[in-house]
Image 1: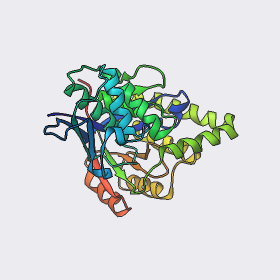
Image 2: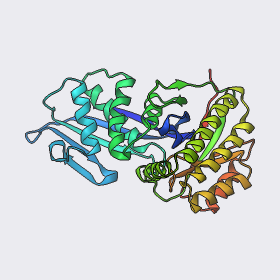
Image 3: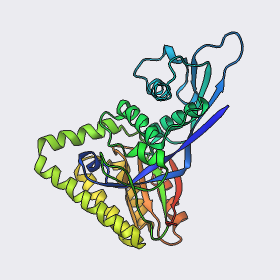
Image 4: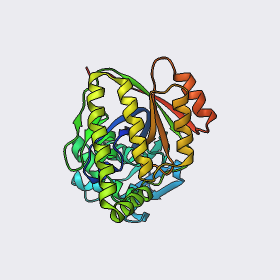
Length: 314
């Protein structure tokens, strides 16, 4: 038996603009994980690879899945990368406590966990870059035109400064900080949100392009603030980023309500994280306000809360 896991992630600043060449900052959320377990089949009925994913009510032979099924693509690309032509008789079981369609990188985490568990079971070493590359191809099935940030942060499991098409860069954290991730309870379709922003950009490239540039500037400032340990400034920049995301039309009344509740309860900053149109909100904590902010978010309708800490650079 071989098991492997991969964490969730949140984008601190830069979503949507990152698709158009602007930078983004993202951090892993280690409190939630996707896990994949591979077991060699035994007995007279063994054949091929059987994929079992109870959360999505799936139990199927690999050969019976559509060629474009995300799990089938992850498995086949992993075997190809490992030089395996004939699939061995294996059971691949997938479990995850990462909320789906909530901006936490659930799809990327599942892909990375599958790639890791299967390649290790096949006694094949795939670099983190190879793991991320396979997960990125699967992300295209989930999201259409992904930026690549989900698979990058999930694979490397560290805070990264990300620009599409460039190697991810770890960034310095001068002082650790705490975040609360609040799930709105409304699923987020990243593909729909990306398409909406694309349509807005095609309709008015000058105005929307300026919004992207503004977001890029906020990301650059936030990176400096984080390196300096200026958490108050980071909160203000998150709030400004939210204003720009509202201009792009990807916030919703549910998200706005959660953001307002967090700020009123003492959060240093709050914004949507991920594609928007549902999904989650992140709130930056200041001082000892965690319980107060969490209570406010529950009252405002949060379906689930996750507390996570981004540790100071060593």
